[in-house]
Image 1: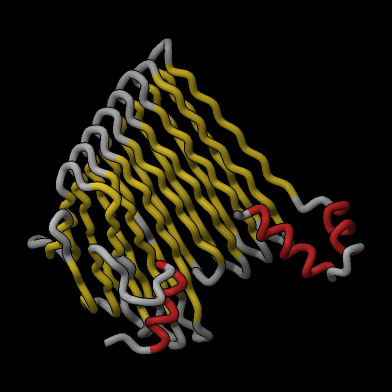
Image 2 (image 1 turned 180 degrees about the vertical axis):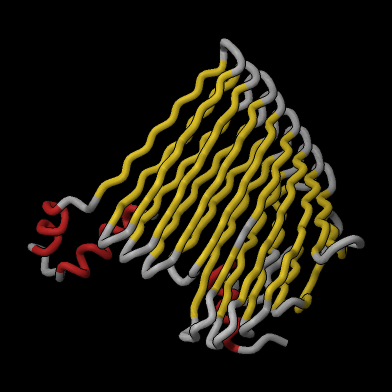
Length: 306
């Protein structure tokens, strides 16, 4: 049974108000709190480490998997390995993410390592949200690692969201795409106070027609720090794009490092980076509609991060 704090965090990271349909594995304070499998999706414990394996049968269509993690006790530190085996010709929606409620003096930390093995012609939509709350002095730390292996003509859309509350995060993502595979990443990030957030992406386009589009939108407030490091490697006739678009406020700092490496004459790669403050005329315009300066800034930020 989950308490009210855990249920509220579950709503934040996975939009779950009730137990979901389909396959799911809910982890709370280092233990499995609930699990369900279906005829086409099996979830089993890993034998060699903490974590689970999710096996999706070939041809599975329009099914979902939820694997959220909730920490509501101070001082918990865990590393969890979750492997996804997505069968050929399948279409699935996967929801992950972690929420930490820390009202104590000890740091709470969750390092989730996800590995995706996506079969030929398979289509996956993946949403991962991070959330932190609590008034304790202990930090809320999340370090997600993602490894992606995409077979021919597969596709993966990833939505990575972290809005306030997390004191420190270091995200690493690596991907290898075979011929015709397509990867789309949309990262949305907001830091404040003295929070730190690092995002490190390396995408290798290994087959003809492979395509990657990695875009980060972020806001850094107060004295927070962000680093966005994204590298696309074209080893075949392929297309790739990476972009960082950031708003900086207060005494915050942002470092954007987009990188391209072309090892094939027909590799078409593009990178973009823009960092700036909110335009004064935008704030003034909203203030003429009756908003305070703080409310105007909040409206602009919310629209930017959508």
